[in-house]
Image 1: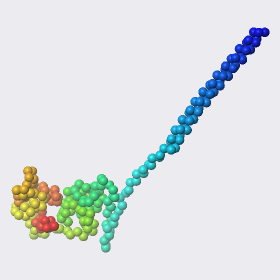
Image 2: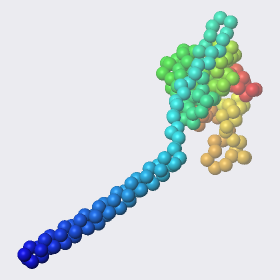
Image 3: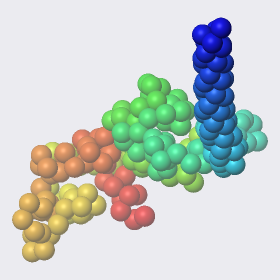
Image 4: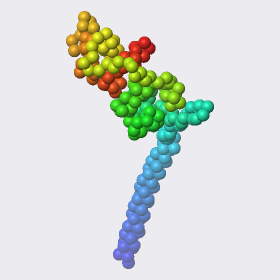
Length: 222
């Protein structure tokens, strides 16, 4: 009989120990859950209170069209974009540029309308209007044929390679040549002799290798 009591007491002790362990385990699990919930609540609150970054929308504006109206016709010309640092058609229009304005100008001049301002375009512009580049104020006038055309007369002498004299000197000065007394090393000298340097400079500026005295007079008196 005593043995049974002892065994019963032993079972009761083990049951109590097991119950205590479960309680301790339960407390540990509750503590871990509490820490997890608290951390989730904290980071969730931080996310909600964090300022949101505004996302900027990039909008590309297509160039509009401007219309120059004449009594008999209207010329549609591409309008220069408001802000474009890489705009290749900004005035003045000159050799090396490309775009819709150049193409419209070429059509008006009667040359290949490829949209590239090359030697052919410069030459035609020089022949018809006596200019080698086009300003913003000149462009509408050219497109509407209101700019005075400078055509050499049939009787006007032509300056070309081999020509000499005061007119050649005047041409060289217009092309930026320096007098011998003031010229620095490497600068072109105005020597009144139409040679290779003069021809190259004239071609670079006008697209022509010769020029009439009448046309030169028009340029130098401006």
